[in-house]
Image: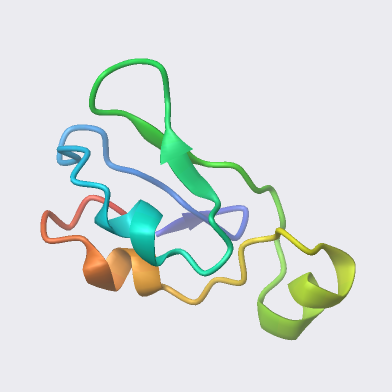
Length: 75
């Protein structure tokens, strides 16, 4: 599930294993100050090439983070 084209973290499922952070090709997913919480620091509603053309650090909607999460906590 995406909100405004950006992956969201299910904080009930996330155990902060770091896999989504490690695989994000743009390095957008980082820890928040509170334990077991992460966020995606991007607000683009576009995907792929459109994002790349507008923003060098924008989420491209590749889904690699969701595929890598063993807890189904990011979509």
